[in-house]
Image (cartoon, rainbow, N blue to C red; front, side):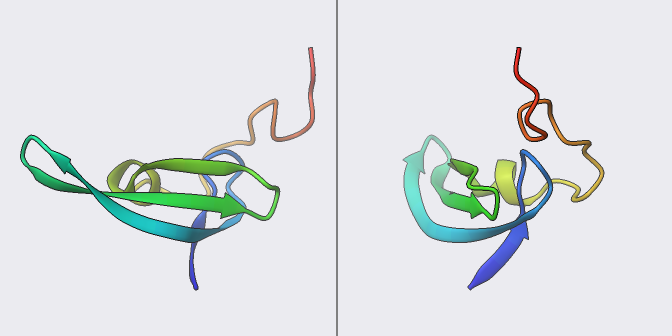
Length: 67
């Protein structure tokens, strides 16, 4: 099990899937994340895993604010 931080709320998230897609400069690693608050993300590993953790405030959606 590989853990990281959720890009939405900063909580713990598990990398549930890794795969590669061909890019113009060669293969690009992609990941699928699922956090404990049931947020799901799929995107490039560089955009989802290589960002600072814990410094982002929760978004309005993550704290349950609706409009």
